[in-house]
Image 1: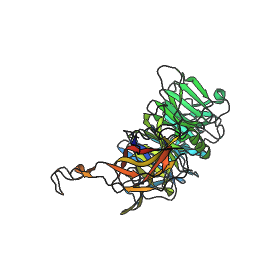
Image 2: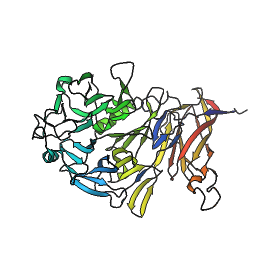
Image 3: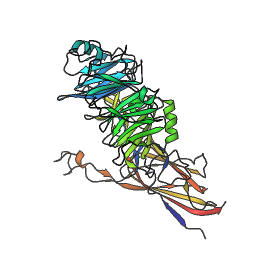
Image 4: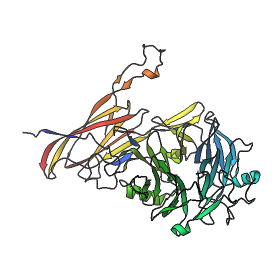
Length: 532
């Protein structure tokens, strides 16, 4: 008599995201060993990431930096492109690059800062630039701005003891510009006059020499943190109290052995300040129980892999997508982007992680979060994209765009099918999937730790549409067609499996077809086989 079918529910498959750190044979099904171009929705279900939709015609060089600037009722977006800074006119996408300012520099890796109604830009090896709202010639070097507007303090622009003022990082907070990474001494932080961004040598300006604090190190980034001033070195972090009162400012704490590997990865996320270090993604967590600021490692599930990426690419950038609750970390040179879902914490106190990749020159080269357009992605090919839809869309001309599909995929851990000495006869995989009409899905499986998969079994998503297109059934309705468009319900799909195994690993992939698809549930069906 044949054995009965055994059911193995996988209703929590992948809900904790990617884990490349632990042995995949020792994890449970809530983890994934590969998670490419997917996100985990609020319910923990696996879905496609959104697409990158180009909003403007590409220029001739990568978008190295961006910022949104508001002045009165006017909102502008500035972008560093090659040796110029442009105002981006999103209302004229075929000719968006206006009001070019030649920076006099050689690269576009600016750190732009909104300060007191103006914009300051700093970049390693370059003198600072400035945009002054309302001026006839708004963009100019900060030194030129000092010359043209000098009314107090020293007639010399450079801070005391500096020949060429070329900070690599800066911050506009606590009423001043704070800057560091100057070529002549990368371990000194300088601060401007109160509310005057171009005065660096008068009585209200000054500097802090970090060599007396952490020894030999260089300043990489500067950030505010709950009334404190945080100065990131490559190997150390210095935290100061009372930065808003220079008569009372004092050193609070030095964290040794941990620093920041990339300026543009420092992001405020709720009560945390996240940054990338040589040892992974870290945060300065705020607590009410202790006086000192504890360090948290948010990359424990992908630690070794992330450390290898840090060693290969020092140009990493990050942004916090507020409406998605995602910290996005990209490595432009190797085309790998990590999405850390800060809304959900895994059992080992880390955010869920997935990875994104992009074809060709659509990969990110800079990131910015704006009030007017949400997430903006500056691309290697010279365009600026928003995060929407389920195609990567290229803007070709005023009357033409091209949609490109991308493949989302995931791979499970090794699933133990029973007693280790008994193989199981594989019968079927049941998958409940929502939406994705017209999307082709492929399933492969691996047996008993083999790296050779089965042949791919493909099937088409064809959920049943429900609902009504229009309130009254006509082309013109009282409230409009889009509000009452039909929805696509859940559907169960049966995938036949073959062979026998004691351990099974599943891989599912799908190419986008313009609509979202979401995996809700999976169930394995198998029979007990022979002892082997």
